[in-house]
Length: 145
Image (cartoon, rainbow, N blue to C red; front, side):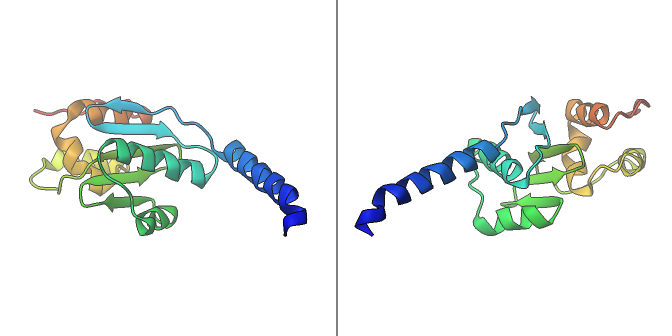
């Protein structure tokens, strides 16, 4: 082992460099308490970005939550945040259970394919809702009256 010590150190350094090269930086945007970013090319970078945002909000993800996020596209994390991964964007918002929402709002969300777990928050935060609509490129405005 002693005679290969330097070679082993070098191998680990190369592995660390390879790992660092695989991690993509993401540009996180914020509207009210909605955090969103364009999806990176690999899942590892996405999980790291979500974990970093949630840590900044005071929630440390458990290992099983990270594993679930690899398998599922929408997850309630720590009973306080919703993480939704769509084709182009990932959204993180506070979890608010759906209570009384206008039927028109629910229908609009269904048409735009907005995750039901996100709707409780979006119903009470129009700026965040409009940001998601813009990202989904929905040209028709929603009426709140």
